[in-house]
Length: 451
Image (cartoon, rainbow, N blue to C red; front, top):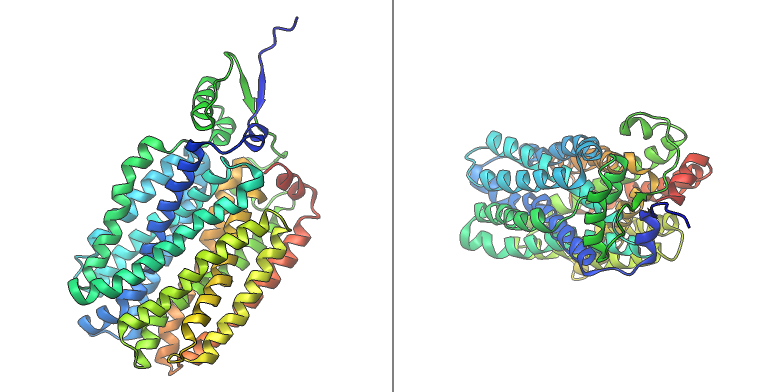
């Protein structure tokens, strides 16, 4: 009779089981984090007309405020990934939620542009660290057969948060002023923080890579999956062989360069489109004669459409080739964004065009976030996701800044919005060709098989 201690493959164990109440709680908590993130990212677009009028600054000058948070997002994402792969998903996630909550509240009490730029930059650091860690943590706790759908459901939180803050801003600004919206955007993540401390688990696959004691792994996995393990059980998870010593090195080793670059370029192009639309459309529509409440509500349709698009994209990704689904969504986004520009700022059909553009663009971007964790091994997963988001955030910086520049040059609604069909189409081509080429490289194919 063998006395060998039992050994458990963590990935297979999670994949073959149903989803427990604790795993659903992880989904809900990550959803709420992303919703808080979406609220704060979208806030300045809705506040821009009021701040520009109150402080008497130019639209181009306000572009610095719009760009400050995205610059912070880049720094936060680039630092958060390696930190998360070293310190843990949960630790970095808690710090990021605390940071963007506190700095958003403080930003409400600024008195000039330079103060607001500084506080939005600091808020952005916290925001940039939050998103990749929610993605990575959830990907490591969800069965593979449901992973894409549930990650995209989590990312619906971003659209929900952005849409809610749009509708809320349309009511709060006339009644309480623009500062009240920033305060509300900071209070919500701070209220969420205690729940994250007590109920959010650390990633078991991270614990394995960092060689945590088997007893601690058993306790965490047992609590999440509602099971008990025999004394002496050891745990493992299959991982592709990686020669690089550091997580960042994995991104450019053994053929991962192709997949890394394609993710970066695609994410960049998607965020350029989304941030310019979200950040500047209220101002463009107000210039065309619409009241700010109506402009905010129409812009919120873009995020509302994204909620539906994210669900369908995730559902299809679990059944079809993910890259084909994502590429098709970006192409649909290009066509609909062009339709928004062609319709004009005062067209009766504009809300429907905005809904359709948000359906495809946000669906594609959310699908890319769901796909990225599968492209890298555990030791570099958070780094791969966060650096994709961090480098891609340069697209959000460009989108936030270029809107003010083009307005200053005399461009109108139709010209600015129609031109965004080009980066959306580039995103479709890049994700399709880049990923198909990368899959032919053995280390990448191995990583995808072990995701």
